[in-house]
Structures are given as C-alpha cells and as structure tokens.
Length: 375
Ligand SMILES: Nc1ncnc2c1ncn2[C@@H]1O[C@H](COP(=O)(O)OP(=O)(O)OP(=O)(O)O)[C@@H](O)[C@H]1O
Ligand SMILES: CC(=O)N[C@H]1[C@@H]2OC[C@@H](O2)[C@@H](O)[C@@H]1O[C@H](C)C(=O)O
Image (cartoon, rainbow, N blue to C red; front, side):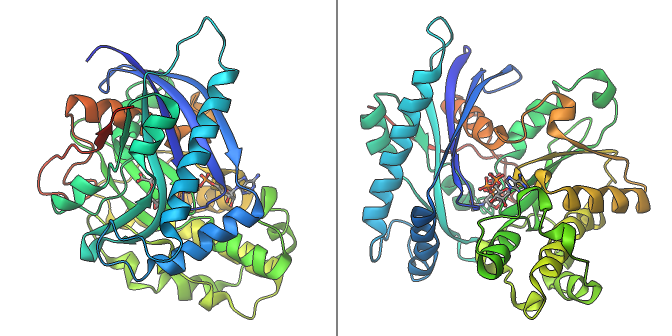
C-alpha cells in the first residue's frame, strides 16, 4: 500500500471524550505521526454513556440496541463527525489531509467468553457525515477467529518499537503499557509477534471512586491520593482476583473490577490505594510473560497520576525489570497513541494485514478485520 494519511478516532473506556490523531502510514513499517486533538465529553454525556453500560448488559447479539442505545449510537457517531470537522479545520492548509478514517466507537459491553463485544458507532453514518471512507468494527473478526477482540493496539506498538531512538531500541523486550480506564500491555520482542493482554484496572476505578466520594471526574495529577496512604490489605484483596493467575490472551470488561474491596476507605486513602492497585496489577504482568521487559513505556491518561508511575518504578526495581519511562521520554505522544493506533489499524485493514495474532488476542491465526463504509 502506498502511504495514506489516516485519521484515527478513539473514545475509550474512561469515557472522557474523543481522541483524534493523524498518521501517515502504509499500514506496515512506515509510520509518520501527525497532529492530534481531543474533544471532551461534558459530565452529562459521560453519565449517559455510563448508564448505557447498564442497558447493554442485556445484549446477546452484537447488533442488538435495547432501550436508548440506537439513539445514543447515532449521537456518538454525530459527535465524532463534529470532532473530525473541528480537527480538520485546525490543520495547516499546506499539510496532509486525511483520506481514510479508523473509527473505534464506544465499547458498552465486552464478553469475550461469549464471543461478544459491542462498540456503539455507525461507520456508514460517519462516512456520510465526513465524506471519507471509514474502517470500523475492527474487533469483530478477531472474535470470530477465536480471539478476545482486545487488545488491538499491540500491532501499532510493534510498529512504534521499530522507530524508537537508538538508546531505547537496543533494550528489547520493550513493554508498552496503556493506562486507560483498563490497562493493557504489549511486549515487543526483538523478533516475532508482540505478546499482549489486559493487565487489570487502570483509571476507571480511581475515576469512579473520586466521582462518588469527592464529586470530581478524576484525580488530577494524583492530588487527592497525595493526601492519603496505601491500605495494603485492600491492594492484596484486589490482587487475589483469579484474573491475575490467568495466563495467555485475556481481556476485560469495564465492569469486571468493582469498588467493592475499597468500600469504607476515606477519600484520599481510597484514591492512593487504587493507584497502588493499578500499578501492582500492571507489574504483575511480568509473572505471565516469557521474558521480563527491560523498558516500560507508559501511555494513556494514567501516566499523569504520579503515584501510579512511582509505584511502578519501585516495583520494576524490586523485580529487576529495567526502566519505566513516559511515552514522551521516547519522543511519542501518550495521549494520542490509541487514536494513532486506530488510524494505523485502518490502514492495515485496507491491505488485509493482520490486526491481531495468537499471542495478542488468542485468535487461531493472525487475523485482519474491520468493515469498510464508503461515503
Ligand atoms: N492530569 C491527570 N492526572 C491524573 N489522571 C489523569 C490526568 N489526565 C487524565 N487522567 C486519567 O486518564 C483517564 C483518561 O485516559 P485515557 O484517555 O488514556 O483512557 P481511555 O482511552 O478512555 O481508556 P482505554 O485505554 O481503557 O480505552 C481519565 O479518565 C483520568 O482518569
Ligand atoms: C473492548 C475494549 O474496548 N477494550 C479496550 C479497553 O481499554 C483498554 C483495554 O480495555 C483494551 O483491551 C481495549 O482498548 C485498547 C485500545 C485496545 O484494544 O488495544
């Protein structure tokens, strides 16, 4: 494939808004990262998305849209179209313009054990609204091929690993950790396919905790947690979840971990303890990897919580697991990475290249995927 300028769209499990990013890519080794943009959801819309998770629980087949989910899907899609137009308006007149969109949509249900994953997002409507071809539904074929349907970002992490500055590239295996609502890891070895899985809760529990106990949407820069201390017993209760013993490909629904073990804690102790849980859950991944990573590159909003980062560094040292750095330290953009990934995946989809491998989602053989909608 020749190089295409692709616009990636991600509305993740944190439900905080829409990330947009441009990538010029052939869907293979050539990756040139471009501009990025973010459109926040206002509190009321975030609450509607949260309510949709409840409504979606009754879904048994992925195209069912009970209750208000059809109307919500329409609105989510139109909000993405508005975001695309706003982003494109900011691009310099002389620079590259997107000719393809990679669209994630909003996950409202993820039940890999039932081969069921539901993203609200109407690719055909987005194509009509933007006038651009749209690749969407990139998780479905992986599931049809026996995979978990997530995580999908490892294909992009593997491509980025090849572009790392020499001081980092010489330290395989490199681990990319996305600390979103849920956290996931991609380990990129020197040779061979990436190894990946969801590691456990990221920011979703912290967000729910500080919203419920403190009335704020997230613990900005870990300020609330700074006033608290780690309750070791609660961390242990979380880590006793059989999830952590499971080896191989595995992926989570946002509802799989709850605040139950933290109930009764005071606001700041809860925020600090849940940050420790996120860090410990990620570092526990080492126990399920064939080789301990030598470098950890953090992306996603959780890298801005200094307690998560500090706890990970301490644990990496204890485990002899090398350095923990932020995406920005390696010249990358930790906020835009998932949106960039959806752009890259769309380009791979167009050329039929694999989006997933047996080592990333457990699919039977490397699987491409995605549905193309033309304007
Ligand atoms: N300054 C900050 N300090 C602490 N936490 C922050 C900060 N900024 C963002 N976050 C956290 O990051 C979250 C958003 O992260 P991100 O956009 O990576 O998640 P996502 O893409 O929605 O999730 P996922 O990767 O699970 O799909 C917010 O909900 C918040 O918890
Ligand atoms: C079903 C779904 O949307 N899963 C998300 C979620 O958020 C993080 C983690 O759980 C990951 O598995 C996935 O997103 C990333 C971007 C992925 O598929 O790579």
